[in-house]
Length: 239
Picture 1 (cartoon, rainbow, N blue to C red):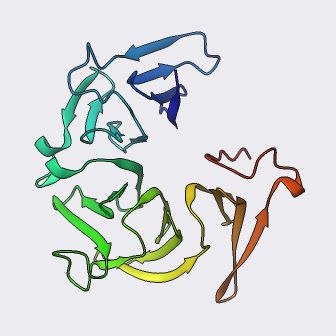
Picture 2 (spheres, rainbow, N blue to C red):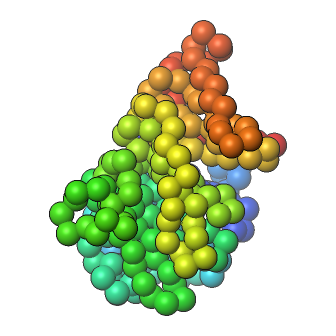
């Protein structure tokens, strides 16, 4: 199967999303697995492009083809997000999911900007680009509607898109304030290491963004530095 998403499970196993074959729960040694097939698991997306497990243990499964769903791992039951989140029925093409320290869920979409969901209030906020239809100036803060990934660290939220990275500060009222825009290339994945550096996979190699004083120092690594290929689709950091 073509693997499209991997997320560590809270039980030490792995959640593995695939292209057209649904979801797998895989043991660390790869010898045992449970397959949640779209044909036998109602509402299971055929293609799972993003996975997040929240503090309650619920799985959020994004798909490039259909609606976002939540799955209870204890039962395998999937529920369309529109039955859980008011106004959530239109949440589709979710390519990135992460949560902040207050439990807000951030959803990066391919073509419809960024969404922030507050489980405490039930409020769903939509962030788009300036000038996009029906968007207020306050929420028209993104550089691109086409977002591949989202990364949250403390009060900072990074959105990787087709033209680089937008960095926002999550304010106390859960709204976003622009901190900076970095790179000028399509970003496919982002991870943060223990030193606070953001690593970004792109079609032009691997980039490292390191905070320095009031700015950010950017380093680019390519095949000339030892990468096997300049196209970096995904990143995993091991301490």
